[in-house]
Length: 157
Image 1 (cartoon, rainbow, N blue to C red):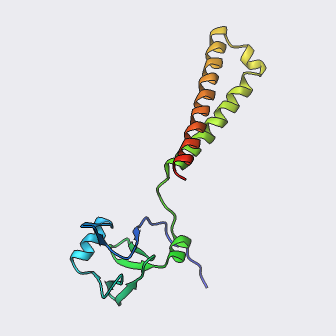
Image 2 (image 1 turned 45 degrees about the vertical axis):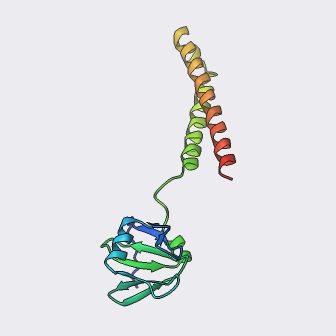
Image 3 (image 1 turned 30 degrees about the horizontal axis):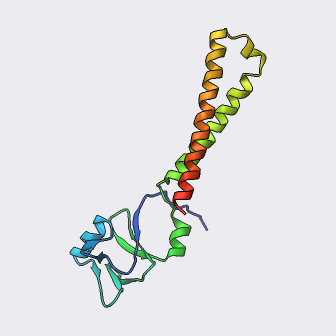
C-alpha cells in the first residue's frame, strides 16, 4: 500500500464560542459572517451551530474549530484533531523577542571569542576600538531584550 503526506496548506479557522454574534457585533472572521448571512451557517437552538455542506448539515459544538478549506468550503473540526493537524502561522511578540535574544546571544558570543584571538590583535587600533564598542552595544541590546521579555511575561500573567 502506498503512503501519502498531506500537502502543507494554510487555512483559516476560528474557535466557536457558542455565538457568532454578541453585544451587537460579530466575533468571527469576515468569511464566517458571510456564511452566516448567506445561511451556510444555521442555528437550531441555544449555542447549536450547523454548517450546510454537500454531505448535509454538520454540527459545530462550543469549542470546535470552524475551518475554511482551500476551496472556500467550511467544516467543523474537533479541538484535539485541530491541534494534531494544524500549527499557527503567526508568532507571538514573546516568540519574536526570544528568537531575537537567541540570535543576539550567538553574535555576542562569536564577537567576544574573536576579540580574544590573535587575529584581533592584528587589526588596527581603530578597528579594535570599534569592535569593542560594537560588542558593548550588542551586550546592552542583549540586556534590553532580557528586560523586555521579563516585563512582557509579568504584564501577561
